[in-house]
Image 1 (tube, helix red, strand yellow):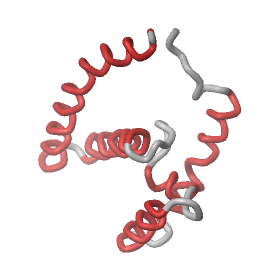
Image 2 (cartoon, rainbow, N blue to C red; image 1 turned 90 degrees about the vertical axis):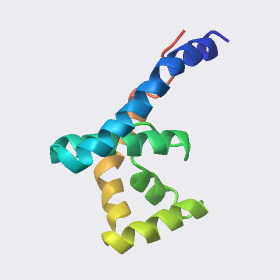
Image 3 (cartoon, rainbow, N blue to C red; image 1 turned 120 degrees about the horizontal axis):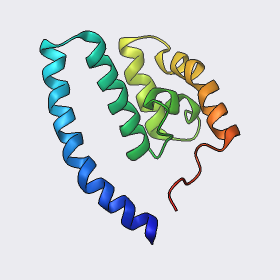
Image 4 (cartoon, rainbow, N blue to C red; image 1 turned 180 degrees about the vertical axis):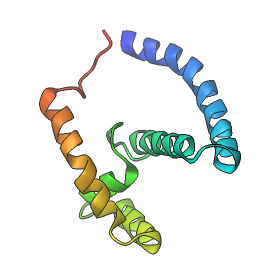
Length: 115
């Protein structure tokens, strides 16, 4: 119960900041530095992966889709969609990110940290 309460309190502060961050990201995308926009999109990608697709917070949707390609319909859809823009994008994303996923899991860094 303590963890849920702490999560609720934290989210009441983070959600408005996330909305503001998204709006700023749109402005940066049009007028700002490419590096800043890329970092914001990467963070948004990881957020979407963790919340919508129940993935790891440190992994992109593309990498997660490659891992789940045999089990999940949405993963096959993501792979087909990204292949329209960049061939083998999800496979390459997974190749790049899988060592990090393996390290985090091996060290137990994914376990509960509050209370």
